[in-house]
Length: 259
Image 1 (tube, rainbow, N blue to C red):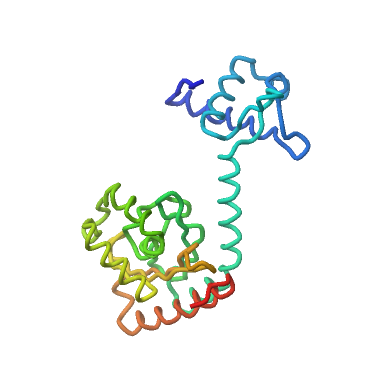
Image 2: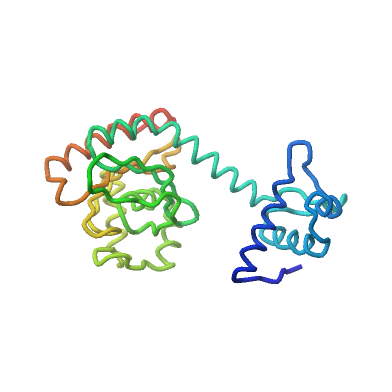
């Protein structure tokens, strides 16, 4: 059964109420029936049923065909896996990020790929007056900026094809929007083991990024140094690349990757 989509202020409140129903699941309460949801929430039965319908349609819950009770669905499992993955890699990499920030005195970011977008899951800023902020949790195109290009480069070729086929929107006047140019850059990233970009995602910003890889060679995250172009001269760039490659090599080795 499909649910009526509600928009606007009332729609926002409806979403919050629907999500609040998930709070009633516990280790001791893995399945909940309609009547129990009504009793626990104090919400009228018709409203509860509408919320459950919406949650089921989106995969957050599913109804057991035998008991007719509701249990958490695969979408909840998917989100739980992603959160666990984010925090596990974040905790492991954080000491390296702190060291990299202190040695470069620039912003250091950790990003992962999720459903064709890059997400920043950690960012450490220096004490400099001018820093380039990468919003935590924002979903950004993979073809713009070194940190996301690295993630794109280490995806399977068929996934790269799909992402390119979706289009390459321009973010700044230096964004790569030509498919063939992007493919050449991907090949170069794979050859060199890192990516450098200038002003592709944020005007005036320099970024260098390298992949954190696991046993099968895939990249589960990217580690990056970001700062203003005018502050990062040729010598600094070379030093940052070497520092970054050394660190991702150590991290990747801990995760079972071997060259």
